[in-house]
Amino acid sequence: MTQTPVKASYDVVIVGGAMYGSSVAWFLTDNPDFDGTILVVERDPTYEFTSTSHTNSCMRQQFSREINIRVSQFAADYVKNFRAYMGGDERVPHPRLQSYGYMYLADNAAFAAILKENQELQAACGAGTKHMMPDEIAAAYPFYNLDDIIAGNHNLRDEGYFDGNTLFDWWRRSARERGVEYLTNEVVAMNTNASGTRVESVVLKSGEVISCGTVVNASGPRAVLTSRMAGIEIPVEPRKRYTFIFEAEQPLDRDLPLTIDPSGVHMRTDGTYYLAGCPPDDDPAVDYDDFVQDHSIWEDKVWPAIATRIPQFEAIKLRNSWAGHYAYNTFDQNAILGPHSQVENFIFVNGFSGHGFQQSPAMGRGTAELITHGEYRTLDLSPFGYDRIERGERFVEKAVI
Image 1 (cartoon, one colour):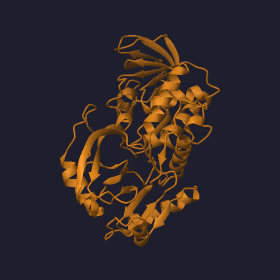
Image 2 (tube, rainbow, N blue to C red):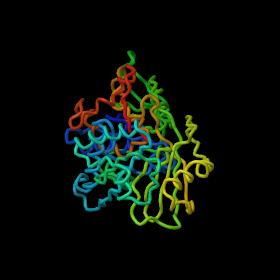
Image 3 (tube, one colour):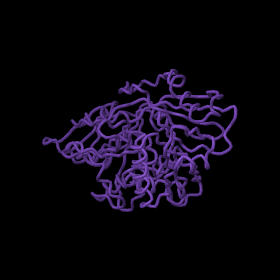
Image 4 (cartoon, one colour):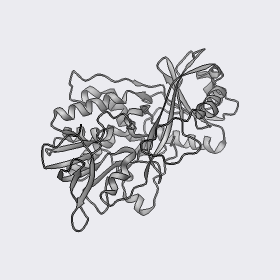
């Protein structure tokens, strides 16, 4: 049921109330220098079709750019000390970070060289990544078929997966307890000043016109629909990603790291089952409401790949599957963060391209700093700024899955 806002004006209006809307809202309330009013507008309070609801909640240090490594290092610390970050509230649980690690496998010299280069940077940043030869991989994980593999990277420290929805649930709950207003409604238009340099108000589907100091675009795969209301184009579109949960007739005798196979298929332990996923070979933008599964991907791509890499997985049973959407940045597959170059009070937290959950603590904190102080105070997140898109300068990250 559509709700109407309590006030006619808010200091911050956040469009979208899932992981990023709630992260920004909560970190604003946690910033001692922010004392403004916050409205979060969410079109679907069930969050059924959001990227948040379809996440695999992965966490890794294995990136090729230092800022991406630092962002994930903060996330790992945040998850491990979640209750402390939430003010010591004894109601807050202790989410577990399952540090099975990622295992990148290289079947050619060029990718092996990239892995080695990445490992050196990650180690310099304090990550525990090891560059491994096939005999070392086989000694640690004898179930792999490594006939075509020449090297791999693996890290067992603060890397694996976590219960990201616990963070989301408590950010939203705590933000509301601290006075953030969550509204079931939809922003359908924005009004700018005469020079087009500020959004002065947003128009709700129910008809209200709400004045605002800052607008935050936290609309996930729908980000460009929100930005167009302010006359802004961004290269973000929904791309379909598939997840499969399966049971092995002969389970492995140890945890399976999140393994990135050269085929593009990834797989990992998932409780008593296993999880696998991949992008489709043909990867176009899809409709915002298209969550139809393509079962041939399991039969033709995923199962053959995992059975080849792990012979024990020849006898498996598919237990569950779903399709979700990446908020895919077609420009360089990295986040778009911070203000627009012309519409100065329009703030992006968009285009995470599958990295969103693990980056949400640092990006939410940084966005709250930017709104409150006009600058980043902890991590310098300016490499993710919108201005790089205007300049045509891609933020190149070699470790995109």
